[in-house]
Each structure stands twice: as structure tokens, then as C-alpha cells.
Image (cartoon, rainbow, N blue to C red):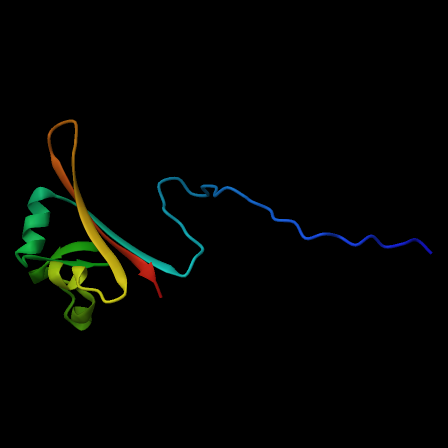
Length: 107
């Protein structure tokens, strides 16, 4: 009878590959949310004229009242006990300011 060799455990390191272009994907249990908007829309959000939803920033008068709890003011979006939050401003080659507001963390 042939002897069965004992296999040693090995570590396989793989690089992340992009499956869909233009989409950030993760298989972790972390959460990610990002708002990218113009200077004008950012100021309207901070002032409470626009609210954040999963569809993007929307005007108060266009809210679906059945789901009002799903909409977030700027302060509500930034207030989190378990997620890291932050923002940055990017200036395009044309001089336009783009605000990037984000939060991420683990469930």
C-alpha cells in the first residue's frame, strides 16, 4: 500500500481584483457610505435644505413621507458612535470644489 504524504499547511496570498469597473466592492462585514457633491449642494446639505438618502441628496419638499426616518441631515450623517467619519475637498482642474463626505466601520 502506498504511503500517504503529510501535507504542510500553506498560506496563499492573493491580490484583490476588480470585478466591476467604477464600483467599490468588499466582502467584509464593514459598512461604507460616501457622498460626493458640489460646493453648492454641500452647503445646502449643511444648511438643511437637502437631506441624504440612499438615492443621494434630495430636497426636503421631495421627500417620501412614508420613509422620512431614512433621510439624514448633514449632522445626522456625521453623528455615529461606531463608524469613522470624515470629509475632504477636491478641486477639479477647472477650479470647481467637490466635497467628499464619508463614513466607514464594522457592524
